[in-house]
Length: 531
Image (cartoon, rainbow, N blue to C red; front, side, top):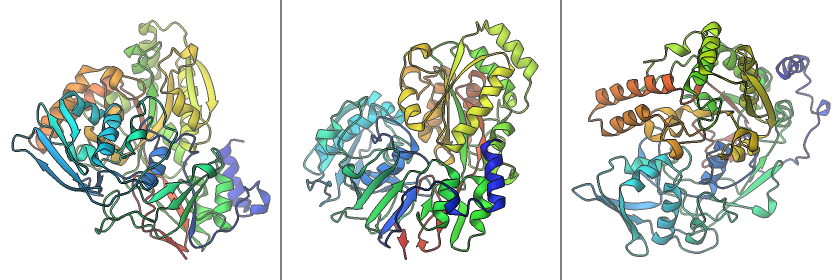
């Protein structure tokens, strides 16, 4: 019996609702000033620039503030910045910080801290790399002011500084921000609304955040990462519970207050509990991803990647993640978020119908020599485990050799950054997902970029994709943007930048004595209170 079947039967029998029938973590009942939250995964590392895991970004949004914050309309709004000015030729940007901002260690936030933080961010972020390529100077002007001088205009500067996808422009003290961007930081000092209690951090068990008394929220109403981040609780405890049945029981018993990603199969029993609210976490959904390593065999061969895409059936992946509810998923013959202005299916025929015979033919033509595919599959995340199981069978069905490495998400996050050959501690493929909010255009879509060594993990090198990214940035109107995205989608499918496994919705659940929970691409803790 697989886990999904077990959970369904357990739910039907009332086992999940009976905490005594499951191994429960030792979680004491909390006060109204302590919010207990079950995140999507373990917080195994905590450097929001070094990697791009959502769980790290979500925690980082509590600890580090950003210069701007994107709102629910994808518009950049000032956050740490008080004012900005762009020269008439578009080549010089001048920014000024809000006065009185402090780091958690009591030191003031200065322009030197910002410049060091931006330099570290720009070395890892696709938009940052674009700005860096045309940069003349990035330097402080005075304690609160800095300037960014460019060789050519960069109209999307504010979006780059505001976007919610990883890595964000989290501002750190200069001494920390000077850490090599490819080395993890070990000191977690920000100026955000919550302090990270490193002494209480037990990876695999819990992470604790405490309200920062000297935080200065903006006066505007909170909207995603924009506006006033007013904390209504004094303490947030992230409780790591990898097993969905155990997490469901903890939520029902009031031992935790909010569960970020409940398994779809457990939603009926949660909804039957009068003390629990259940809703879609983000209406824009998530795009499942089968990410291949373009540097080494077998996936350095485009025909091997095309064989996988030709044999792939998105319905298999989606049902493995969300179960039988057809309202929770959509097929995706492309890469951009359904229902948004730039959504396109141009060139997506390869994803519309499985053809195993054609896939086997492509694999034979590729000259595949039977190299094992090192599949690193996180078992502590429902989507990645579900997709990994489907992929193992998919690869075997077309004649590929599979080396299935069952591990945890923290290990996947570290291993996927390695460029060593798969048989020397590297990897061939992994699964993840991309929030729909990150996939509305190329500016915020790290995974669609195909600029070789500067690309996201997997390092695809597809000039045809990058040409259309540039064309989109230069587009004069929506029609030109759509034309560029259509061509980009076609090139990304043909060259298999990665394999999209479908678009799906996820739930979140919280107890009814908790108010202020909203939907969006990450959990927003500001404005959340507990009776």
